[in-house]
Image (cartoon, rainbow, N blue to C red; front, side, top):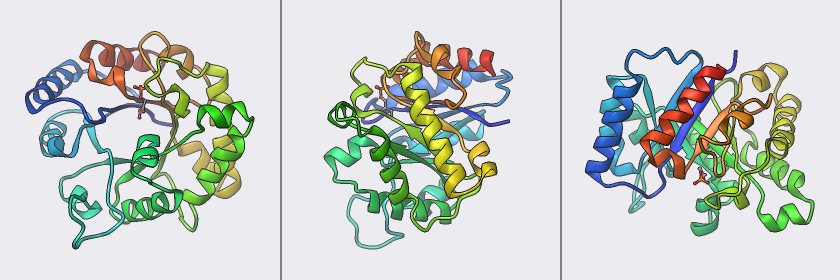
Length: 254
Ligand code: 13P
């Protein structure tokens, strides 16, 4: 059975003490809970990775980074490398997020390099793809997503070590969620792409998450879709009540 992943992408939010409080509360909430096949991942800013890793060691949460360098080491001021993340026992790392594509010129080629280096260091990449509003309105959503996948995964072998997140850019931080049908349509396309380019087995094992204004009010309908295996949650993951509610709903659906 495929894993269901509820991942919180905190983006550039929370201070040290807010992070400490949140991690304390979430690990407290999860203590002794049977999550079944649900995995809870928190992706805090880099500064709090060590704190997150300490909490993860004592609980059933996983920690992810929000970015990684495409280089292994060297004179790259301000960057954080995959070997560094591995040395902190970090399990996941988001790459190709639309905010990094938009504000930091992260291209598909760069995503491809980051994907390679993460796999080399046994960190599970959460590869984000998704179309802008303009692209959706032009009717080229499928083409955009397939191109992003083809380029990001170029010359890369995968088995069960990758997560893909479909995040329509127009749904991120806007309060405008894709309908379950809209999300399902593209996530099914991604699953078919995995079958075609890898195998049925890889496609069956790869969690495909939805991201974009996911919240307690809409998570159930989204998770009920056959190709939505969890969520990459932004805004709602910053709020302990909302985030734990979403975990609760995911666990009930199993
Ligand atoms: P929101 O949930 O705030 O729309 O953000 C989604 C996202 O970008 C997660 O990576």
